[in-house]
Length: 341
Ligand SMILES: [Zn+2]
Image 1 (cartoon, protein in one colour):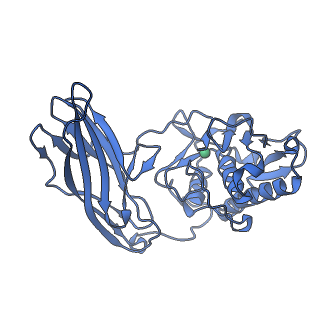
Image 2: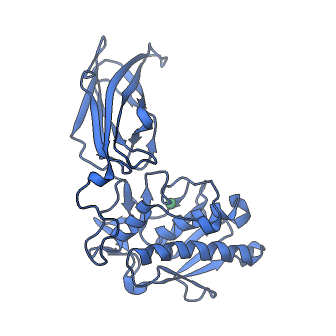
Image 3: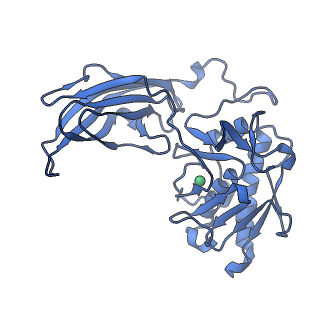
């Protein structure tokens, strides 16, 4: 897992007050007659909606939830993590929320996905042992309309106009309610690759660095910026960002760590990534943190916090349309907190 060393707060998006409630009574479960429905556009995640689970028994309940929906279109989220199943423990009388949203992987066509959410509720006995599990099914419908049905959607919006919104389930680093980013006048950020202490040959580091920088610079240009985000420099003096490849600046269990306020990126020696494509993908994420982007909850995005391990060719290294859109949104903000003065 890659992390950003910064006060990143993941709030639950969406109001907690709307949604649907399933009530667990000692002898029955109520609230299963109504279909839990979500709607959105194919290729984008729908708004998240709460499913409230109310424990109306006198015992603690452990509830395990798993969707059985066509095309695997239903996901759980807790604001920072996305998963396909979920469990939570409810004390007697307590009402807890599962947050769900719909997403169609690799599809740009309208599709209605039906199915159900299986809820397995296990009472916890006084001695800590499990009682008898009761499994119920809540009908679910996730409906996606085709993207072309969306009014006003333009593939190449004009430069300077209010273009993209922030992509759904994508976070910026926030400070006092404002997204943080660099001042444009500070771009390009000078990046120094500090790999001499690894004892490895410099060539491969240079290739990885150059490619990662190229990818973000191309994104910025496509978004209409008149300058690059990053520029590689050969001297450490005066660099805005130093990339430390010794592995000594990593948080535990991470493959890369960004310290935006310190101008530092911690990486492992290149040989430990299982390929320079993997290393470059990690570096892409850490570089983008230095621009003020936090994480995406969608696995395909380069800013998804878990490591991507498909080790692409450096030449084929790429980011998603959502990654581009996030940077586009962020660097159009006129009200922002400067990430370093
Ligand atoms: Zn990260």
